Image (cartoon, rainbow, N blue to C red; front, side, top):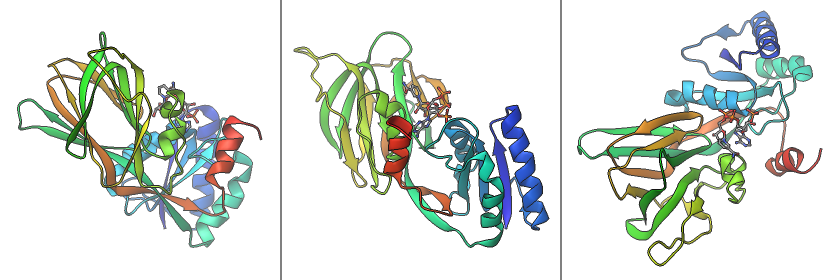
Length: 264
Ligand code: NAP
């Protein structure tokens, strides 16, 4: 099996990355940075986001597993002292794959020619670079509301514990193929009225966001932020692709939620 290790880059993560690489090579596994079958992320959830984006063009052929070198992660669920156990699992057991939904984002521009497609593991967030953003929101082809406020966050179920949670969004189990739209400080008055609650959309519902003027704003896809100009629309829906995690033992999502936010 071909593998690669993606480190956060700090000293501890690099030491663990070097050790796991050496152990897996002793088991005759081959390093392949370009076409790995398994990507071992060493760091935190942010490291897994970066690993996902590096290999998002080959999700069907790549499985991910995370070792956390900080606090417990949502995507990184093995601890450094379990390294040898994990190596034996990777080398010897055909692993079970668990698939999580990801978000497809298509940004179209006013020139009607260019468009960009992204996949997000956590979310796409839209924020103004100055003042409020004003967006018409269409759901499944129908106008739903005009949003005015600080921004919007469209998250995946596994990203629902990240930025979305800080915005008062619900935590969604990643077995549900859905996306969630959460508001950032909406303005509500006679002119602008928003629903005020996070919306959870199923797989077959597309959310189309249309900026109402030719304003500049920031679009973040997970950890990657770009200032966008001339955007006509941002289309969000559950992607056809999924991220595949290699699971060698059960680690229920709600246990992870409890251990991260309530108590060990
Ligand atoms: P960062 O600002 O350095 O760290 C963001 C924090 O979010 C880290 O503690 C990270 O965990 C954690 N995190 C990432 N994905 C998560 C998930 N699915 N569930 C629970 N926690 C998660 O940024 P970054 O490391 O580059 O990560 C980018 C992410 O930051 C974005 O996708 C967004 O979700 C999140 N963010 C959150 C807020 C907020 O909560 N107010 C604001 C902006 C962005 P690790 O320490 O394990 O890496």
